[in-house]
Length: 401
View 1 (cartoon, rainbow, N blue to C red):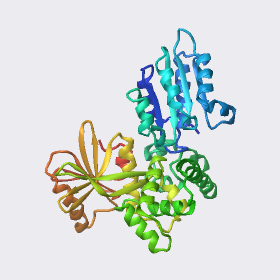
View 2: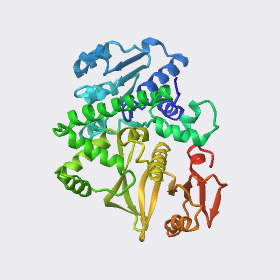
View 3: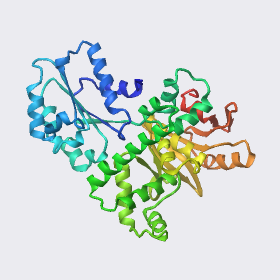
View 4: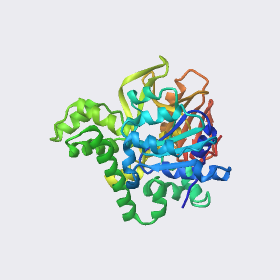
């Protein structure tokens, strides 16, 4: 089953033939390679010939010797089509030593349009970004949104049932082909999880205590949406008999974020308009993976909804923070070039006291930007002095604009 990932495809189309390197980043198996294939089909439909397309996946053993940057450069240079645009696709480029040198040399040539993917933010770390600074645009990719999942089922009915399926079956695209096969889904997710831990973290960061690393990752998965600090995590681990320093925890958290399995939400003082350095929250790339790691007994439905909303805001191009206003906390402050939006997320606000509690932080904000409460209540939209209360599933499906 091929899902066209229209939002991401349109971004690639918008940057076509522009003299910028297009870098698609995201967790392993979120659909980056498939996106490049779909885009190549689009190019062919636009009249681009097979000779004008060079595609290499560096996880394919057939191309192993091209992980040497000089050999890669020679290989590509020989295949450039004179007088026509050549489209170059380099998949999982972090496997190539000194790859920025290749990109840099290709960038300065005429009629070359470059697209690369990577499963680790380390590839865009400061020294690499400096080499190709100002020459690339980054497209950040996530697994399927709830809307994409719904569209893949062929209709928009049974939203409640499909929302539960979406969480339990995982948002990784291939999991759609394993629907109603929980054991196979579990094995598939375990495979992704182990590859990320071993290839993207342990090897890359030279980590020796894999068990401790997995314990910390499990702790983060268990505490999505809760304020965490490296000291708090280290203290918890140490008190359960696994001694670890806050500095090591910090190194692990950085590695989780670099491999796109975990996303940080920093705190933001709304009145002072400043970023706070303590007690970030962390959200995870896929809830199905959380079920795989922790089992279904630790459901925590409220924080799971929060996690889904956080990822959706990222998909829509926002930078997302946790807000602080006076003594209150706002679940999400979403910022983009057009301004700010504020979100509270709650399973239900039918109880008067719960509604008041969720409204209070938004009422404390003295500006005119949109303020929204997202809830699973199947009730018509309501307004409270300009604050909208919206059904979360409708919002995820883009039905509430």
